[in-house]
Image (cartoon, rainbow, N blue to C red; front, side, top):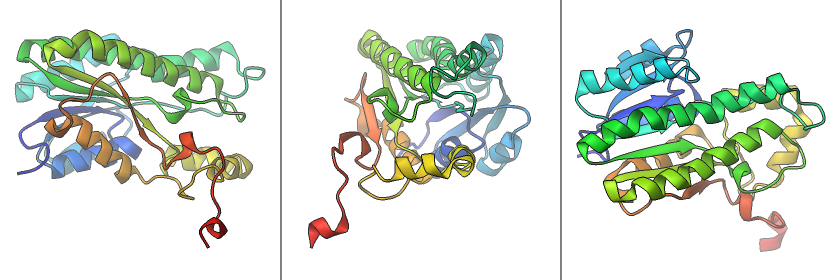
Length: 259
């Protein structure tokens, strides 16, 4: 018996990074997975690999989001887990002094409005079946400030966290759990692209992580699997930090501190 045996999960951004690692983890634990991603992604191949389905979706488009969840319901009869994970962090999102309204709106739409659309679309299915688990990808930056700013990204993730808390409280009595996953920096193509362009920015982040490294996508996937499983049945309306101690480190220890 797998941790997620018999469950049906919809994962946005499921063709790469954290989403891909989570899709593979879910399938290994017995879940049926619907991958939601852009048509230009390798989502079809991922879905075939995992024995699931692929939904081509622009997560900022309400009709396409609704069609993705309708596909999951029609094909598999239920939706037990929704991992609303799609997100971006473009170079144009910088300090508030440099970030234009176009960059602001783009990041807000992909990172925050998409989560609103996904929750709005999936909650009726979960109400009908009597329960489910929603995991929304926020970030450790929803809990703390950063001197090296990505102003719209930070604001969007704060919005995801606040919305998650409200939904978790509102629907707890209906058997629907809603939690915010708050990862630290993760070794994904998105992070590699960002930091390859700015090694100084990468170094400034890494030095603050007590574990001395970025997370691997599989480590984040393990946390999502827990939140999606019945093992987390009394956890809702909260932030689930997976950040290597970053958000609680006043001073990062050196190896010499333990000698």
